[in-house]
Length: 387
Picture 1 (tube, rainbow, N blue to C red):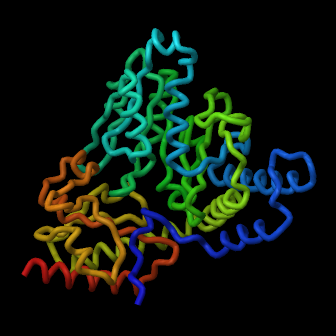
Picture 2 (picture 1 turned 90 degrees about the horizontal axis):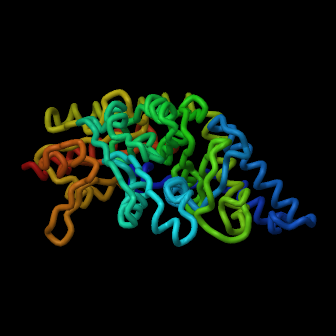
């Protein structure tokens, strides 16, 4: 029997409708280079531009504001590094120019905090803003962190571990009032909650295909019209000169279709996932009582994401002894050393609670029967470990 999949925040299976579009583009005479001017190139170009329109429509952007990348990590790296280094060209300017200031939160994905660490090693100034015990950033703390040389604020739209949705619109207002660019990593939010870049007020938005029932190795970056940054990858002038490398036509086609599918059904799917998440949470509470503690915001979170701690247990031990489910845990034990979740630590979660954390994330193919079975499997293992 296949394990019940409860790890949709790690990656999603490719939707069969997306696979169909990819296979159709592979089997047609659409193998040309989109930059070529002959018939084969034009056919490939049409596929790319059709996908660009679909993706743009899904977030209320203009097609020319979308560039395709090799994934969400590349998209975030481009937004951060290209923005921070935009005016540092030439050896002397690099040596003597006043380096800028970047603000991030303490719970960012490595695709954001690792570039920030790299910039710090080059002498850039980095401020890390904390979160509350529910994983929420306070916009007032962002405001306090702003300096005269702040060039960029980068705050994720939703957290990948606990699911907390951030006050992006309020932060965007603060950034705009200070003429500071604002990037948000929406890799986890895309397809789970409605996204409207005009309403959000962001300058950059990261999208990852494999979190959206599209293939791994494809992503996109929204860049608001009027924002001028350079390329992250240098080479030929693909993607309006912002992303060098011949476009991955077939995967781009898949990403466009995935965005279209998600947008068409998002209200219904959000309701369904919220119901399944509540079923899972209430089921575990019924079985294990006050041993279940919620990590993350109780109402302002992703509809599919449930992060709970089972007090008296180690999360990694539950997963090791419950092969019937496939899920994640923020903290882990490696060679006898406990590695605590950076997100839960930033939320000031007690260590014993962090150790018992499980991230249980639902998706398009999750069912009520699976949730009931998973509840039973997890509860039985937990009771055994607590005995």
